[in-house]
Amino acid sequence: MVYPFYEYLIERKLDEHMFPGEICFMLSEADFLANPGRVETVSRWCMDFPKIEKIIFHISSKNPDSLKEMVPSLENLAKDATVRLSTPSGEEVCGSGKPEILLVIGRSGREEIAEAIAWIAREDIGPEKITEEMIESHLRYQVNPDFVIKTGGSHLTDFLIWQSVYSELFFTDVNWNRFRRMDFLRALRDYQTRVRRYGQ
Image (tube, one colour):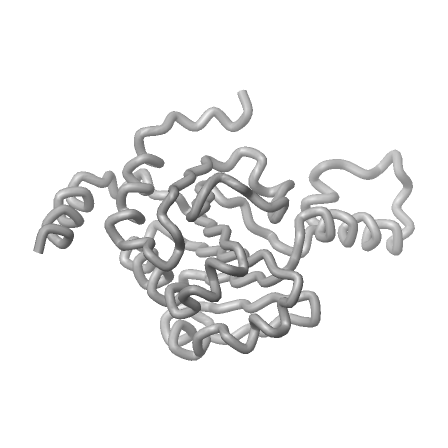
């Protein structure tokens, strides 16, 4: 009975105007395998707050196709959101609502930037015309996470290395399998206490 009451106390103090518009959870393969169903659970927690418009999950893995088979049924989430599943071998989209949920398995940030540069080169654009904005427009994942949460320690991957340069980072020692709604609310509370400087 203690946890629900504590959750209530934290949630009622959250400022409805200060939620991240885009939130990203970075997981290891071991994290995901410990509890694949928590992806849907955490998505539901985020959906309790309409200001969160994009929910991103990245699972670092050298065997993404095998993990893809363990992803919970996307149709459950697609009833209330747009769900995009992305792996090196392809992408799958289902649903048409909001928020948008992006689940990426086994893709890296360096790989994404290399793809963007190759795409620009195929368009025969001269090097003097290449700008940051042009590179950004050619990135596979058109997201800009306000808040990145890493469970189970402080090691980050290079996923969204370009897009997350100004993101607020939150590290928790709580493993993904034990990550509770209370831990999520604590992270949101921490986010709301920060003054974002966007690199300045």
